[in-house]
Image (tube, rainbow, N blue to C red; front, side):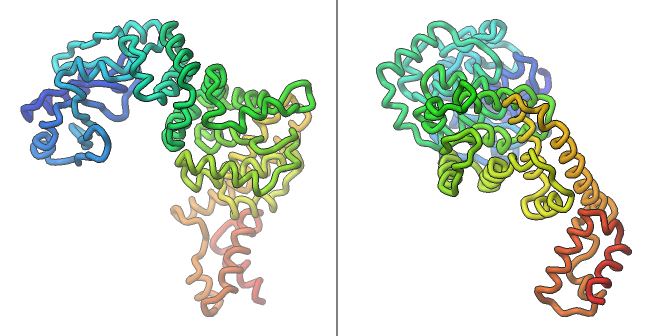
Length: 428
């Protein structure tokens, strides 16, 4: 913890008073490494801290101004105190595990028993204060997200207060902007997607942010269950592998699991249409998901079933060049997760493994190009092709480059000399 205290001391050398707070203290108490240090300081001190430190910026767009910068090589963000004292500031924080502060001398300020709750793996409203929910109902989703991510229990009184609020004021959930829903949903999905969605369902929140997922409960899968349960099994498989498979640690992977049957009526998805894709895109756009991630999700959902049939190296090469290697890797791996969840992994085991082999061969060949060219994706540029073949700029040059990419991916060309020979053959 000494490194964090050094940052505090450096800030206090400016004459300001500062405390470690929020996620930084929680992570320290949980034995985790904070990537960014979070501080609380007097708002009036922000610009003097900025001036003396000589780096950073003050963002005053939100309700609480924030100074962001770097101290001793460590990124930090300093928020203005909510209230006149650190104790008042902590009382405004929604969860007890986030309402802990550390002074520069290492002393703890923990008026609401947050460290006790961390040790006992309990999520509790700060001060058991139900008004924190009433002032911002989205805090309910934060409670569930933290409980899911850290596999903690929700304290009985907090659980009671949340359920009572939803019984009486459920309509207020409709007033939450979709972008705010999206931020919390994504934070819950990327670590423990199955547990998080299950908890949202237990508290009957699905209709407020993803009604079509809730509707899947009434669509049979033809195997004695329903499409909602099928989605949950896929999310469970994904969750079981998140800690060990880097490919799955992406928004596009878990979102494909969440949205795979939205807007469909059958398990085989034969009724899938462009309207369905548009509906999924609309949701993710409202959640402020980046467009490239949305494209990857749509491509994954639309193509993963094709991997249950043999795919040639040529087809993989075409797909990689059209959609990117990452998108195809995600789709193939996603097909394996769906097969495990659906109980038919053994049936397609040989086909999936052969497809994995073919894709890896294609990717290996493209990687060799980058190794031989110090990072370039091609052996030759368009200008070099024109010089070699004495050609003028035009569509034919682009066609030759695309053909050369295919020749590399399928193993016909594996060197600069081979690329030149292949090109000369094309115009002979």
